[in-house]
Length: 373
Ligand code: UDP
Image 1 (cartoon, rainbow, N blue to C red):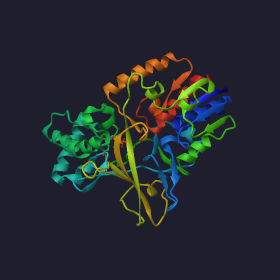
Image 2 (cartoon, helix red, strand yellow):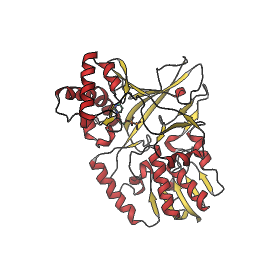
Image 3 (spheres, helix red, strand yellow):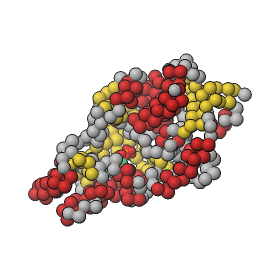
C-alpha cells in the first residue's frame, strides 16, 4: 500500500493553494490527484492553436479582490495584466452598462424620465450605493417601483431563468445581489482594488504554484479508483461533498454549462469582452477572449454559454445552487464531514459555496494556516 502525508483531491485553485502552502511552508509531502487530464480545475485556460488567443475552457474568469493578502500571495506566481472588467447587456436592442447604473438609465429611458429616476435614486439611497434588485423592488415609491420592475424584468428575470432554471427570488438573495443596481457612474463590473488577469494565463499560474519538489501531481486519477490503495495522514477533498459520501443523504444539485466556442473571421466581433443577453437567444452571454489580455489576431474567439443542469458522467459541475433547501442538505453533509478526523473539504464543490476566485484562495490559505500552526 502506498502511503503519503497529504492527499489532495482536485487540482483546481483550492487544491493548488493548499498544496503550495503545505509544501512551501512546511516542506510536507503532497500528492495532488485529479480525474481530469489537466491542472487548474475550472480556471484552466489554453492558447487556441489557430489564433493564439488565450481561451478559458470553462468560461470567463476575471480575477478581482479587495484582499491584499490574496493579491500578494498570488503575485508570487504570476505577473498580472491589469484589467478592469466591463460588461454590457442587450436591453431593448441597446447595449447597456451592467451593473445597471445611473448611465444605464439614460441608455434606456427618455432623458426627462431618466433624470427623474436618477434624482429619486439619489434621494432614497444616496450616491455610490449598491442596491440589490430584490431590495429595490420593495420600495413603495411609484417611480422607483416602476424602475425596479423594469430592471427586474429586463436584466434579471430572463438571464436568471436561463442560467439557473428558476426566478431570481427563488434563489438565495446573494445570487442576484452579486450584480446590484449601482447608483454611480462607475461602469466597471467590480469595484475591488485589485483587478487583473494572469499575464500568462491561469494554467501557468497554477503550474507555478505546483513547482515544488514535495508536490506530486497525478492526472487522470479518480479518487474512487485509488482511495483503497493509498494510505494518507490527511485528506483534503475539493470535489463534490455529496459524491464523497456516495450521495447517501441525497444529491446536491449543481448547474453546468455547455460552452460553444466560435472563431470569427474578423479582428473584433463585440464592442467589449462580455455581452449578456437577458432577453434574446438561448445562451446567457458571449465572451470575446482577446480583450482579456489585449491579444492581437486577425480572427477572434467568442464563447456562448448555454446553462443546463449538472448530470453525472455527462457534464461538469460549475455552480452550486444557493437556496434554503440545498443549504439544509449541504449542512447535513457538513455535519457528517465534521465527524471525520483527518478529512477536510474545501472549494466551490467541497463547501457547496458560490465562491469567487479570491474567496477560494482565502479559504484555502486559512485552512492551510490552521493545519500548519
Ligand atoms: N444576473 C442577471 N443578469 C445579468 C447579470 C447577472 O440576471 O445581466 C444575475 C444572474 O442570476 C447571474 C447572477 O446575477 O447568475 C450572478 O452574475 P455573475 O455575473 O456574478 O455570474 P457568474 O459570472 O458567476 O456566472
